[in-house]
Image 1 (cartoon, rainbow, N blue to C red):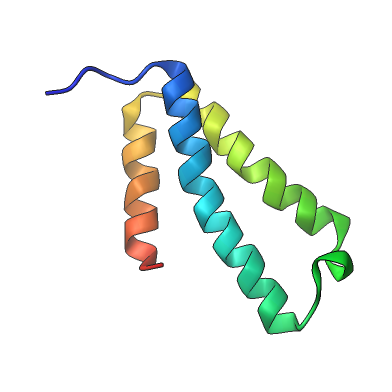
Image 2 (cartoon, helix red, strand yellow; image 1 turned 90 degrees about the horizontal axis):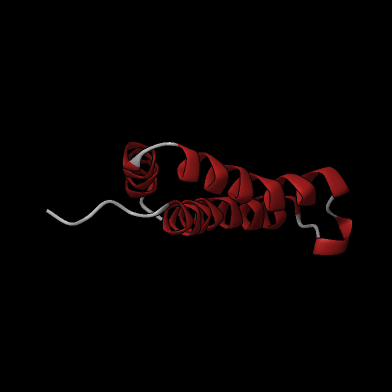
Amino acid sequence: MSAPFSPLQRFAIGAGLSSVMVLFFFLTSMYATHKSLGDMGSVQVGVAIALPLFCGVIAAIKNDKFLERLANVLENLHL
């Protein structure tokens, strides 16, 4: 059994995993609506930036269980 992750490591892993999902959905939205990055609204871009940071903070605060759930969501999306 490996040692638990430090809060900084959990933040980096949580932000990284969630950024993969957010980037996929953001790019899919751009492709489906035929918009460029400049045409996307500031709210959409802001959410795409803030959501991985928020997930990283939650991962740093919570135990490794949050990272396991986040990894399961990413695994079930079949990206």
